[in-house]
Image (cartoon, rainbow, N blue to C red; front, side, top):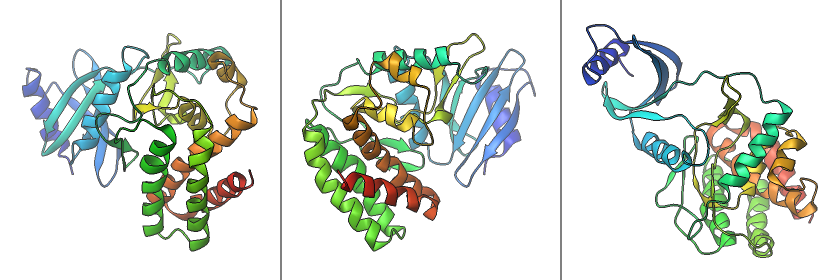
Length: 288
């Protein structure tokens, strides 16, 4: 794991700081990496450090892609640090939870984001959704892309992690039907955040809505709206700002389908605690 003092000394050299004027304050640590605040005499930064720099490179790429449209942390450094790889970001002072007015602003912001067009569904590179690789091989067809690049890999990994045969069969049946369901909706490729659960957004102290930790690609904008509700409903002001009826039966069906991807990913990463949610989602989808 990272040597905190060695990392601070390397940053002092990198940024031409006087001796011992850089200090790292760890925030969180896992088996694969660490997050920390970097304190310097002039300002603070946010550090993400990993042995493998692939996810950090993908995150930087996503932040750069989002930055012209939405407020995201600016990046300051990507490269080697203390025997691993580091992504150093702007430190942002966050305010309170989103007000109803800010939820509406978020909806408007997502509408603008989803107006950024792409030539095909997918992205020029793979990236990560949590600790799982997210495949982005381009496709001209949304149904084909979502089933083959989203559901199918997670289904295979979930089976390897012990997804029971009954649930595995249900997911397989959903994938077969999803090709028809998604072929019925007209979708143009648009830029999406890709990992927009409630923990990856906030507000600055001046009220600006800010987004973090993207897993960007060109897809159907509703995937972001769906994931916002993965762990519970959001105020309807968000949907009004976006201009969508969250009670439309087709929207509700797609939300359940799009979130099945994330439930499978959570099963792969965290285990059986998500099995019941997968079962409920499949039963709901297979009842249509």
